[in-house]
Image (cartoon, rainbow, N blue to C red; front, side, top):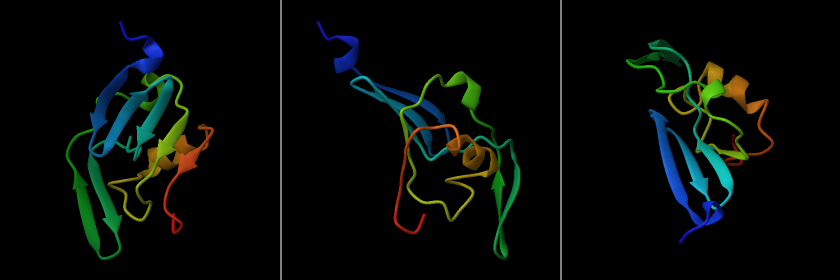
Length: 96
């Protein structure tokens, strides 16, 4: 029988955001927690149509954030950026 440390789990949050449980680690991908609305990107506007299934307060402890990139609010929005200040480790690209 697998122990908790050996199990793999995925909790879909919304958009690119998911909480991964790998062994005993909790990893969050591309945190996006803003409510639906318009998100300007240069001369374009992204339209978010749904909020997250769970907010940051409902995730529990997160060991690290895996951030694909931070140039667009559909991969790191305002509330997601604020969330980064409370996690112990953020892994991303050099440009981020």
